[in-house]
Length: 113
Length: 113
Image (cartoon, rainbow over all chains, first blue to last red):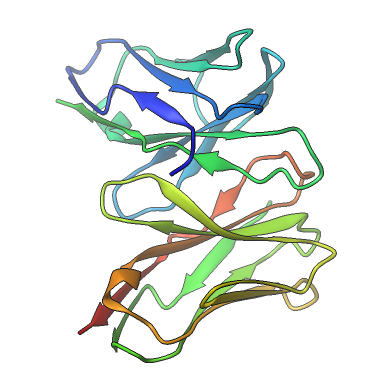
């Protein structure tokens, strides 16, 4: 197992609500990336944070936002939830090094009804 | 834009068989390529990372190769076991070592006792 933790494990929300997902990165890692994985699909990149700044964003609308804290943990916030936001949300941490190997947490399963 | 394709989508083999999973990518300027394992409803476990300067990596019964010129990577699993049953995902980045990963949809492997 990696040292990346995510909370909560599962979450059920109603369309239109807002949700916050949390991620604690592995010790020594300063970069956090978030991915969305719909059922039967590969993970899709949402955004990445490095030194508390957004460092790249995938094709996701502005209602997906994030934060990185001084201890390198991170939050993913999603506003105005839609049914299609139902997915497994994965957090990955890495060190800003030549290899950039990413280590994933167990994920948060979000269901929007 | 990097696109990653995995073939086959599903594979069922008897225990003990050697097998190969295929991954192809469109952008040959790939920086590194990672192979992951995902058990149902779980996060991703990193199996092997191949940097662009390398041709292959080995870990136990697993061997992964990377051919940038042809846009292909393969994951070889020797002497398969029922515990190897999982979805195997490949992912590459082409924007630098710490850039986003682009994933394929995965190969669902079933190893029958």
